[in-house]
Amino acid sequence: MSKRTCNWKNTNFWSLVLLLLGAFIVLLPLIMVFLTSFAPTGTTPGVMGQNNWTLANYRKTWERGKFLLAFANSTLVVIAVTAFQIMTSALAGYALARLKFRGR
Image 1 (cartoon, rainbow, N blue to C red):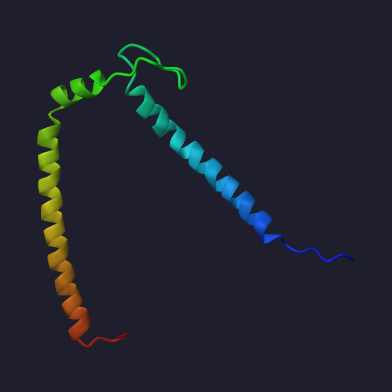
Image 2 (image 1 turned 30 degrees about the horizontal axis):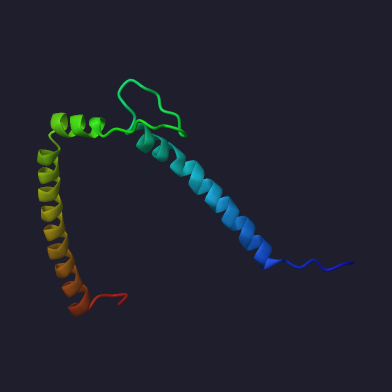
């Protein structure tokens, strides 16, 4: 009987290939959406050979979407949630550090 050994370099290579393939499959729709966003309105762009890139879609979206208001609202929510989280975490940290409880 021959003893089989595992070739770690070969195993690591194929694991990397598999992970890269999976990452490509997961990211492909996002890449296509990103590339399509630069296409002129009403056209279906191909991945290769598109020469007529435009930012008109981004300009229209910024003007129609009220993104500045949405950004301000999101910033306000983030600041409030972060402040509340810091306050409650500090109180919990103090309680865990100072109080005597079973399992400590």
